[in-house]
Image (cartoon, rainbow, N blue to C red; front, side, top):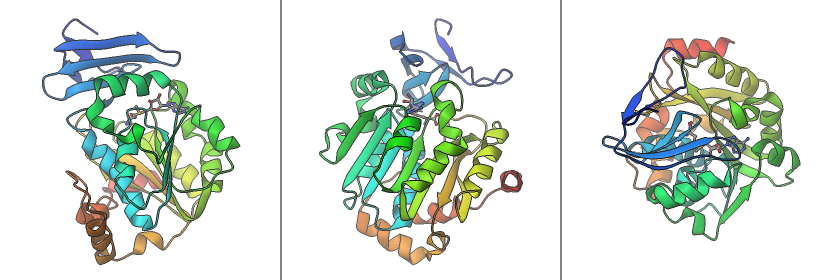
Length: 284
Ligand code: SAM
């Protein structure tokens, strides 16, 4: 990281760079390199191991799509599990649904939660203090292998498959997620920017397809997940769930009274329409 610029190190031959106004915090945690800095265009930015995780200015895109699509598709989600998600953005969106009685978040690195609450509080709002929140500091892989609880929606908001996040892309982790889902349960996962990370997306789909009658991707355009669509993995135990008609989602969205800036019922359906190069990743 040079004095005034942060250069992302996700790809050896391609880099997004952010001008740095001020470094607010920089430290190697027990699990990863963590830096939070202020940028003129995206506000405060969290990066882990040299990779942009979340920014104040565009977090709404990813967090709304990772959360409202599965919860409104399900229609009666009471128990939500978030794996990773240390910035609290997904947790906050999930708790906007009055029907959610319990939101469990399993994060491996307490420093991410502590420092995001301190330096980026707008992302999590009051989510960490909500009485429905159950915050667990543990490896998501181990938690899934050991928990006896069941969930209506499981959201994997992980880092990329390097370092501590690697285990969250593996078959046995997805199998344990499948086993802890209720009958109409939905699993959604962060599956990278498939134009750049095609292998990651291909592997995710192959693994979800082996476990779920309905496995596919849906898309969100997140400015700081550079070079293409953020590709979100979808695995659902009920193959008919995604076939609900638009008026059903429109009614659920209206009843939920969500104030969103990216998500709406039209994009809910449009997000599953995949460009051919991404559709072909599902061929394995
Ligand atoms: N949206 C971001 C992305 O797409 O790159 C991810 C944001 S979130 C900050 C990622 C979180 O996953 C981090 O807080 C990290 O500590 C957590 N994480 C990584 N590996 C984990 C594991 N094995 N179990 C639980 N949490 C994990």
